[in-house]
Image (cartoon, rainbow, N blue to C red; front, side):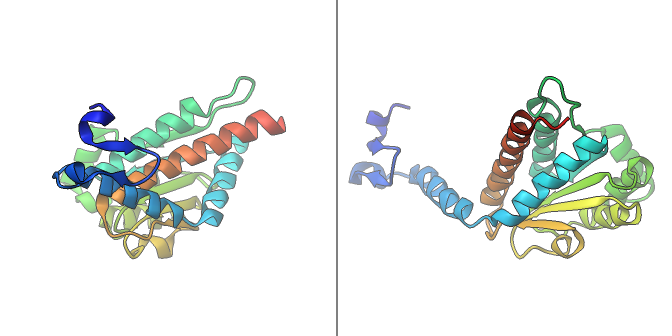
Amino acid sequence: MALESTGIESWDGPTLNMSFASRPHTAAWDHLDELAAVLRRVPFRPVAEAVDILLEARARGRRVYVMGNGGSAATASHLVNDLVKTCRVDGYEPLKAFALSDNIALITAWANDAGYEFVFAEQIAAFCGPEDVVIAISASGNSPNIVNGLKAAAARGARTIALVGFDGGTASQLADVTIHVQCHDYGLVEDVHGAIGHAWTAAIQQALLSHGEG
């Protein structure tokens, strides 16, 4: 839709005329405005710590496993795509990353035989080794399969990163590094989790291109 037809003068700031502001689709603008505010509250230190963990995993040939439910499962798959493909730089070994929500047959087998709360923990017990990395993505931080997955990762000697929202939940207390998006809106939390994944991708690319570490 052209800007002229919406009544928006510019996307550079919240400049709306009254005819646009009276329409229901102002919710779209409100979402973007709130998203910008939530992004500004993201704590940078754990973002940087997570980048260091991922760079170390790549250098040591360790594996990265990512887990999430629903929209967070989609974020997990997207993150794996970026870690494996987008982060790849010629002359360097790529990150070895896997989304634990992608194998439908294995997920449904464990869900049917043991319970959905164990679908990630059982995969981690089978695949994960010491110094591998497990990334948990959960808006609430309280999904039982996420919590059990983090516990299984700790038992295997893996390093753990949690992307959470709301009040952080149990996952924030279990992970080695927690990035807490301080927001109680699912959509906004998921948007920011995706942006953090892209921030990691940019940082990893830049590290490989700039430092000659291989």
